[in-house]
Amino acid sequence: MTTSNPGLGAKEVEKPWHAAYPAPKTTAAVITRDKLLSWLNQGLVAGVDFVLVDLRRTDFEGGTIRGSVNLPAQSLYSTIPTLYTLFSTAGVRNVIWYCGSSRGRGNRAAGWFADYIKEQKDSEMDSLTLEQGIKGWATGGDEYVRMMDEYVEAVWK
Image 1 (cartoon, rainbow, N blue to C red):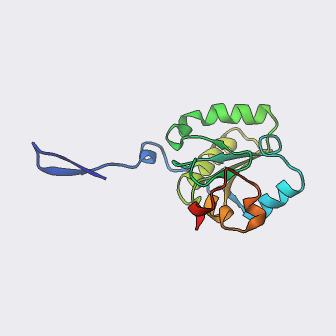
Image 2 (image 1 turned 180 degrees about the vertical axis):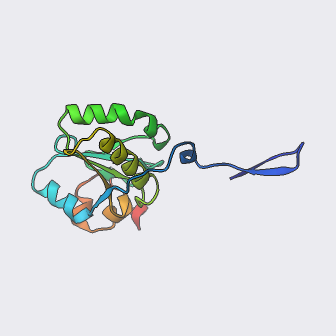
Image 3 (image 1 turned 30 degrees about the vertical axis):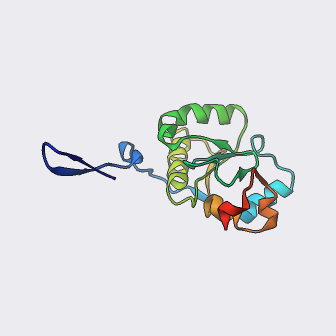
């Protein structure tokens, strides 16, 4: 997006929200949709055995993976220490981040969280990016769609 100041006649390019924060030092590990689906089919429960974090701006569109929590990415960076404390106190060992494709907000957040885990010298918790994000999940077939809340087929066609 560009904005212009009529008094100066110059256009200014608006920086993306994440430019205010350092780039992640760590590339978080990736979890495939197949692996996550196998966890769910084995009876592992999102919010208990692992945490799914949906970072989409339009999280209401098309549905979410069952058990996901939604966080606005713009406020995520400053809350990482609090999230880490909550998750580690609850015994969570895997935190899975995703956005639409997991090529932007999802992998950036997973990297920041992985950085923080390393700073804490925690070898028990992992920060993971869901490969292909919600788009990959929702278009993966019926076995994936059955694991979604508020699935709207038309959004994914």
